[in-house]
Structures are given as structure tokens and as C-alpha cells.
Image (cartoon, rainbow, N blue to C red; front, side, top):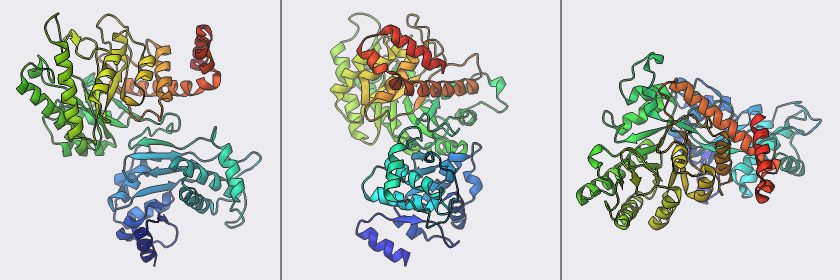
Length: 521
């Protein structure tokens, strides 16, 4: 009967939500595919996975919690499930989007003042019913989950499944009150921070894969190839993704093998980063030989295909060689136009992939880059004029260019596809790759603040481009992760402390006072 109703409703375009309570029996995969939302609690999720023949040990995650639930939801999606919304009682709820990548976490709603938990019976049913109402009325996923959380919270304050069902107005009142300290739902790509702090910083973290070669005496296993480096990164607490270099990291295995290695350690691909080989020492997309320019474009498109195969959607392009060393060595306008046309071709060939240029002002390989600053990079993006063309900003590169990272982030806005976090001493032409916020904490705080102010929200992940030659690379990555979370929490408080008014009045003394206070908390 359920299948017949669902099939007819699907044909009419009606959203189908499936409550997973009831009989302990397998769910037909055809029915699973018809449901827009499958909404089990944690035990029902485990039971359903088991009845579909899945080995739950494959979903185990050493950090437990959200990561384990997400892995189980992915097992359901292997069998055709679309959106999987899991209720977790006092721990809130988790929605795994049908794309398999976007995870929305809703903390439990704070109970009304002078209320306490009396009876949890029926709370999950109230959650599901309220979610269905909010979704049908056109609320966003975040709003629908928060509305449902409010209904579920109210249901535990009275005894009995039916008497505890709250009135609409009472739910609306708590829904409005819960928009602040109770916590709003946040969305993160698959692999987000899994250490319980996900409601504080909604972005996943990646760290420089090549740094896993450093300090080999601290690692008990081999470090002979990329597979070993991925294994080592899998030990970093809070890490969610890996950025691969192409073609550097793909000489000894296939794309499918790389994806399997990520799955083995519970990580995802964040981006594929171009590292043009030394045959392009006179230029990649800027090479004087049109045959080699053509090859560089082809290599960039190959990187886009690798990104597709790994399940990510971004290619970061940094060329160590596109530039010049002496006056009159190149035609600046010609080099610029070559870049414009090359990126246009790549963007048009792979419209589902974001191409992100990472600028650098100078380097031992190229004294002056064709694109040496954030302003120049923005002009290039404007000339390329493609929706899937944007920028990746590296804090160290911005410091080398004499820029204020916060200002550069604000300038780029929603064209900021990626951010690489580090720090440095800002010596001429030096890229130190120090831990984030270790040298310039106030600028690090402002960078995070400006990321939070981007209209529509920053959509990328946080990548640590640091060089731990003399430190433990695992501990350094974990320090960077905690450092960003610290700055994220601090930056979140600044608007409430009047920083906007301070900026309007150009009050440097008050700004420094707020910085000192917020970092001390």
C-alpha cells in the first residue's frame, strides 16, 4: 500500500517523507528510491542498513558521533535513498543530502525556561511531523530542521505521546526564540569536522599532503608514496579532506585507487591543485611555444576530470612558471590574453568544475608573475567572465604582496572559491609557511571575520599550506584546526561587541581593544 501511494504521489510531484518506525523488516529498494526523505532515528538507521545487507563495521568511525551517522546514511544511499534525515534525541539531528556531500547538522533546541525533560515518547514523531509541515510551507532546510527541533523539544516536557504534541503557536514561539544561542543548523560538505565542534565552524579542513613526508621518524609505518601520506593524514583529528596535486600525486595509482584510499581513512577530496612539471619552466599557459601552451591547457582539463572522478568540484591553478624575470622579456598584454583564453576554454569544457586561480607575487622560479596580486587576479576573473572561474587566496602570498588579507578577502567576496591559511614573517620574497595566526594573530582574526561576512557565505574548505619541517606534521595540522576554530568563535562575537560601529568611526584604539578582549576570552 505504501509503495502504491508513494508511486502515485511521486508521479504528481508530491514530496514523500518516510517515517522508519514500525515493523522490523527490510525496506524495498524501489520504495527507498521513491522517498524524498527517509527519516529514521539512530537505531532505526542501523536496523535498516543491516536489513539491506550492509556490514555496519564499514561505517565505524573512530570519532563516532556525527561521522558514524553520516557513514551509515551513505550506506543507505548506496541502495537508492535520497535525503537521509536522522534524529539523534538530545544530540539534535543530521541531514545527509542526496548529493552525498552536503551535511546539515541541527543541534537540539534549548528547552523553554523553567521546563525539563518529562517523557521523551513521541518526540521523534513530533520532529518528523513538524519538519513535514515546515518543508511543505516552503521553509528552507535550515529553518525546517530548526522548526522541527523546537517541536521535538516541546514534546519532551509533557507525559504521554499524544498529550505532549505541542500547539503550532507554542512551536512558533520557541522557533523564534531558538534562532540565537540554541544554535542554528549548519551545512558542511561530507567529511566535516567530526570532533563535536561542528556547530562552531561549519567548514571542513584540509592540510598540505606533501608535509606528511616530514619527520618520518614520528610515523610507525612507511612513507614511500602518496598512499602512505594519505594514511598519515587520516590520523589528523578534525581533518575532513585531502587536496591532491596533479599530476604530481598521480604517477603511481589510478583515480579510482586514490578515491578508495580516501574512503579507507574516512576523508574526501577537497580539490585538485595544478603543479605543472618542469618542462613548462618557460611558462605553462604563457609558454612561448603554442604547442606547449596547448599541452598546459590539456593538462588543466585532465585535472578537472580527476576532480570529477574523486567527487570534488574544484581545480586550483597555481603555475610556478607563468611570468618573467627581466624588463622587455615578454609582452604583458599578450601573456594576459593567453591566460584569459586558456581559462575560458577550460571553464567552458568543464562547466561543473570551479577553476580557481591562486596568485603569487614572486617566486624563485619566476621573479614577476603575470598575475602578481589580488587586484590583478580579480581583473583576470572579470576578463575571463565565466561563472565557474574564481580565486584561491593564500595568506602567505597576500602578505608577500604587501596586502592586508582581510581586505583582499573582502574585495574578492563571492568569487573566493578557496582559502589557504598559514602565516609568515613578511620578509621580502619569503614564503615561510608558518602555522596560522602564529605571527600575525590580529590579521588572522580579521581574515576569518571577513570570510564570515561574505554575502551568501564562503562555500569552500579551509586548507593549511604550512611547512612543518621541524615539527610533527600531524600535531601541526591539529594545532591549525584548533587555531581556526578559536579565531572563528572570536570573530563571531565581534559584531555583537560593536565592531561595525568602530569601523564606521575609524576608531583604531577601540578596534585594538576589541581584538585584545575577544582573543583573551
